[in-house]
Length: 539
Image (cartoon, rainbow, N blue to C red; front, side):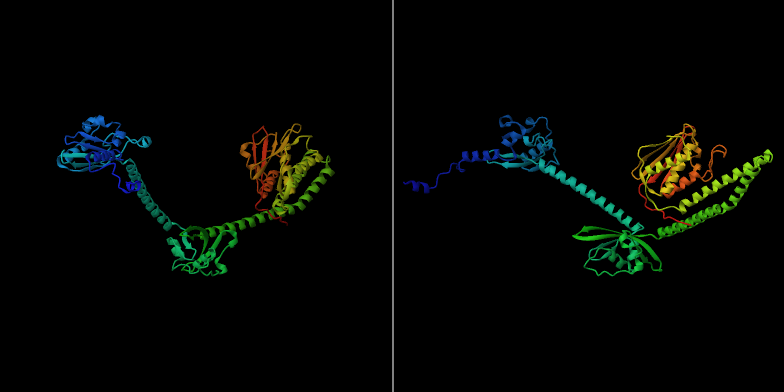
């Protein structure tokens, strides 16, 4: 026979399943390589087969367990349900399934080494089934499957389902609260899509934009929305839009059924959903705010008119008093010069009092004129370098000879502020003059220095004078408020009132901190930026 003929002939199989020994070897190999645990129990309940999977998971070899019962192999484990199922299987041929939910840890098996760190214990599903043989009667097979991952997935799904149910409950509760808030809010809330469709979301919106509301309000809202190609835009009448669209705050006018006009403030925001843009429109009734604004405006106008009248009165009164006062002053001074020493001592004293009184009256009238001119004759604001201003004040005092040398000290650089240079000169000159006046003539010292905050400059005028009792820190800025008699310190009591009025015109503030006997510190705070600059006024 040739080689080709030998190749064409069917080779004999290496294993013949018709032979009992070959079949037994193959089936034994299959049982050992299975990915489940396989145990066979003889009719008397002893173990007659123990596969490789059981050996790996229990750590017990077949020779250690064959011929023994399960209770002997696992003496410390309660196998009540498993034993009952085995007895029913051997006696009555009844199959059974024991799942993790019914029998937690049927056998003390362990997971594979790569999973040992992840699983606290192995979850097992045990299938018990009868095996009927020709010669040995009924055997019992136990198929143990590792279902740890399945159990964990099931628990995770149950947990997620519970969380989802809780989320749905919370969502429904939140939806109910949102609906209640929408229905009870005082603002009208609407939603509009990019096709121009407008839907009222609450009762107030239905009242304003519904079938019984303002028929022009919907067109007005469409006009305010971004342009779209679906709905033609109808420009509203000029009376419907209260404020300019470029200001960023949109106010519109709506009409009610009874013909009342309602001013509304409009706010528009947008969001995207379903691949389309949607707009949320909020309409707020600002009728009450408008009434308050009108009342405030009317009150301000009345205050401005009253203030102007008072300033005009003060100016006119002080101006008109100048002429008779000059006449009285001239004749009293004439009497003093002509008849000094020719009358008795009492007459000379009376003439002195008259001259002194007219001079003080003249100074008071001059100060009143200065006070009234602060708001009426102010110059336009411009940058004012306080360093130059300070040098001018020091020069003025030196020329007047009213201060010893080097008793006015500037500490550090002073800022440049925005204001009326002549009024700021008067302000700081008055403060420095006060510091010198109420200090010792020989040792009096006034220091001027500045600091700043993010929005303002603070200029401090510090003296070492007699100080001021805290109870008078507010009243000293009032007109004609003097803490000492005319014989002790000169002045009319208007200087600090003038300072306060100048500071207020510049949008700032002035305050004093002082302790009697320890000097005083006057702090003038001026803003870095002025939002409103007072326009100069004239008589």
